[in-house]
Image 1 (cartoon, helix red, strand yellow):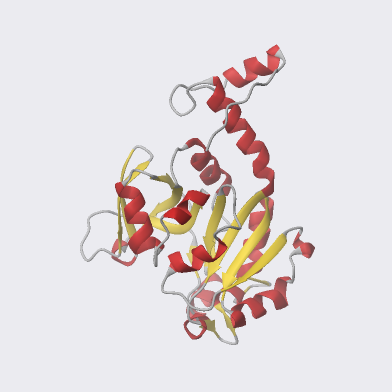
Image 2 (cartoon, rainbow, N blue to C red):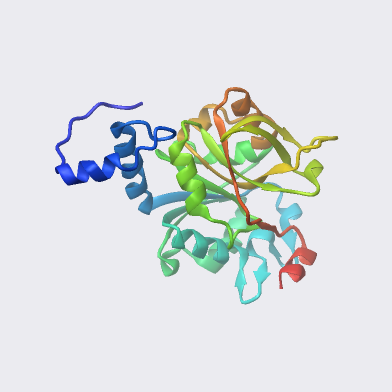
Length: 264
């Protein structure tokens, strides 16, 4: 809910604010001030790393996907470093007990990486929506969501974040192209809005797909069901509350030991 306020600013500052009004996304001075304020507050951004699900299905050698060794680092360490570089100083890791223990053994409370890590234990889950719902009530502002098995060093998180800030939507998905869209979530778009989201379609001629990274407002918890991909995103798309940001770079997925070797 928005509240009306009155502020007094220097005339030159007002000129600078007016200069960013593009009459497309930012249409007036109020929207310009809100955009700048959100960007400034974004220096203390929050990220959520989802690594839920059956621990036995997440195993790679002696560890898990999120703790897999990548050269001289691990998936979780690479994620934290990338997030910190982009202004994310508070990170929630959601997973089951054994996975959380392995993650804690590596990164502890996050202080050595100049971040604060909060551990949220998942007891059981029927999907990614259930897993995300475990941080409901803990987040009061926009937040980034990353899936725990993903390497995203080349992804421009700042562009994704700023795209979401400019949109009046519940979530903004990072999108890329794929040669195998039947294995992913496909989207149909008009402008920045996603009109349709279909997870793993049997047949499709759509090659624009969801990469497992997105920004959301806390309003997403009003729609959270068992699965983000099968339930929440399709519903938000129908309501025109889902937007997308197309990335030229692609993430890498770490599902098994073979994926680890390919990265090396």
